[in-house]
Length: 226
Length: 134
Image 1 (spheres, rainbow over the protein chains, first blue to last red):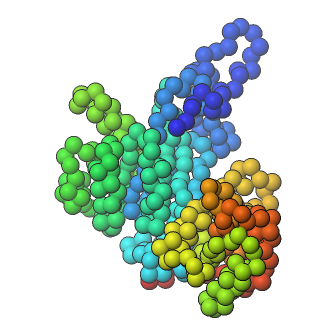
Image 2 (spheres, helix red, strand yellow):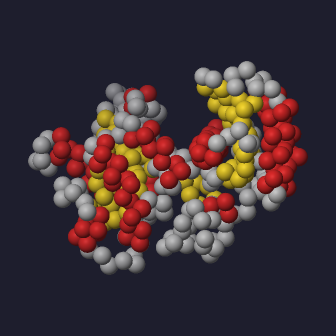
Image 3 (cartoon, each protein chain N blue to C red):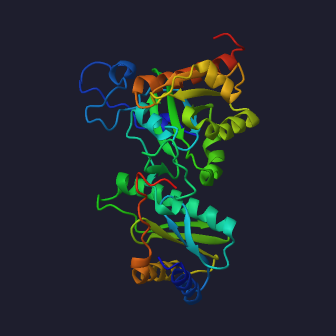
């Protein structure tokens, strides 16, 4: 879906003498000085699309925001009275905004690979958008909140049905003491599907989830050898 | 909010604007508030979700590429067999109109904006109180 080579090229090194530095050393992604953008290295060869799905309020938008190295696209709208009785906030009473289209962020894994992360909207009325988000996706992350486990069943069922590789990430809101085994049992999750715990607000933690997914996909391709 | 009055105003918009088929008022979070009678409930729910998504993406475009004045004046999609117009309509609400392929886009936009001014005070959708659980 994305052609990476046409994306913003790495800036020229300022020095005017000698051959230009290899971009891999000159333009490593990292926290950009202005905080908004970091250049995509010209060495990137692989653009991988990842979808983040899960129930309403599981933390999908937060995860995309945490991992993105560019200013994330987010389509959050304030929840209105029209949603009383429809958008059930039991367990997530502090939630006051919701994604109405999708979130988008980007993270460079190494000199050659970049992940484009698309966060899906959680509510049933936006599920029709999921098809487009899944199209061309390498794999998906299902984010679960143990206070609202059943909200993630639809995502898991759908991914299993369409054969998209995925990992499940238990977003730890700090108020549960379920073991991962308990979560796995409650979700009736296939033993082959990786299950990890994360704090979607923390960049390093959210990044580990994406790494788990990439490893999982790689292991599927190479036939089980990690 | 007087939904009967709003519905009546929407029907009036369709009557005086050639080529229009459906009109719908939605909350910014994608739920229908009221719509013209020719729109089935399922289609109305779907259109409300679509329009909220489009407006939200259009808003992101205005933030990225606009002059910073903020806000989306109008979003439009042209497809085979028709057009979709969406304008902001009061605080927290949008007005969406579906037309056939024969509609005159300038007139549709003009009449929609006129209607929004007319119905301004009816159209706001109060923000949900954080502690207010359904």
